[in-house]
Length: 425
Image (cartoon, rainbow, N blue to C red):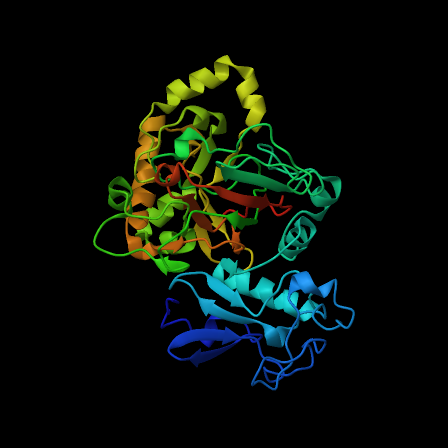
């Protein structure tokens, strides 16, 4: 089941991508030679019964197949197609096997797609960690940081051979997982147990937060929902969470470009003037509201605990102050740059607001948008899904893990350092 976005037109992409509608589903294809050509098909296996086309080796058979030659030919533009995921953002990428090498044109096509649509979903991938890293490296990042093995992601276990990839999970013990063995089962922080936690990765931790984040899902709770869909209407997102009306282990996304555009002109002018001050270590003590933006604990009390124990600040690094609104260097549009879970206060004209007043103003900007299920895309993961998104332009949250306390979830998490500074409005 694919959700069709009727207004998703050819003009939304560069000239590299043309629109085509097939069976009522909007499909975007990159132009090129006619599809169905056998030029890159593997001919080392007999055809399917009743079919003229030769059968393609799967990845596990390639290495053992002496006659195999063509499956690892570089992926080219004509093999790529896109299906819209949500009216505001996101596409599912079809025809792409990221274990294959890619032509420069194919990589340019995928970069163009993410710059226009903010989220790319690659279903059914079978990747080594090195192939994962090469997939992420197609998109903007700090190449020097990758070469040096210096990454903004500090917390949690990482793969020894590819330390840019962190490993996250629940109810999973690892034994030689690409060289990683854990002495106890992976589990999630208690802050994520019962509520949404809307955030952007590493915003507030560095002056150049990651432009691109990604997740490669290896194991996940079985979902009764379509692989990707829009939330049902009738209740707010926080009401859905309170009622437990979701499948555990999903990830929800919302566009901060569309959120900014939905603000009144007065709110936009106000947001353009504000800077965000963060206190990331306070999240260790945080209790989030059901809407995933508010905090029900006293953040000033949490900050006092952090200051009383220098080890806590050292654990997550220094906090920085960033503009609330960033101007996108690719599209010249504006979006909110915010991570509510570690936000402390606003600065305006050099003065800090009281934290409670700042949190109330932040909620007034975000909550009306995020509470409307029409603005939220739900990714109901399937094993081997890979999602890559523009971290500075999308908020995301997992659904509360209280829904799957006895089930397993395992994924790789990647956000590469960026060397692009935040561009103020």
